[in-house]
View 1 (cartoon, helix red, strand yellow):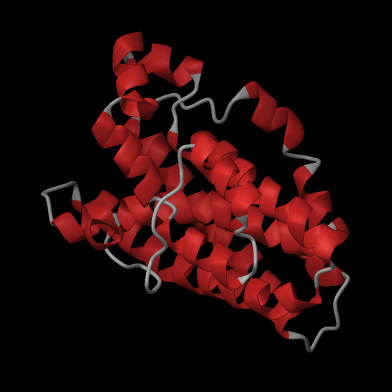
View 2 (tube, rainbow, N blue to C red):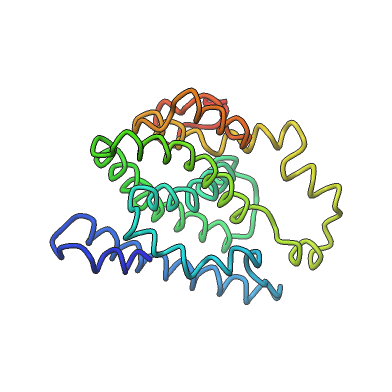
Length: 228
């Protein structure tokens, strides 16, 4: 999707350079993750059926609605970035290979997330009032949907790993600690939504309905305890 977007841009544009870099790095990430999975011995089947069916269509939005597409980019990157930073900050013992993979991923995702933030803030003033309002309602829905796709194990993965149904419900996202964790994931995105005019009385209700409302971060990567 990013390469399709890049090919529609001038070769000397910042968007072209970013898209080329991100496509390259995401390919490396996929190889890195897959190699780790292969060595784990666990047969991982991937995302949900719905997501796998929609995946071929999603890249087309890069050309049709690039502003919304880059919010989608953040929806796929911000939650796992937040989780990995929290784990690395905690300093708990873990397998050194997993720790190194997280360090590499966080470092390289910083460029992708940073560009998406800058792109959206730069393009936001050009939106028409109607476009801005519709997108303001879609952004929290996209964020919650892709967050679930990234973080919540599929039914197949749940069965393979033997996770009881009551544990799944508590962790995703019924327990009070889980609800707070879910809100914390989107502090940076709420800050961006404020900066790009995506927050209004109606959209705030959608954020709340999605369970991802709360105070916006004061700066990118603000620790969750401070942004709670």
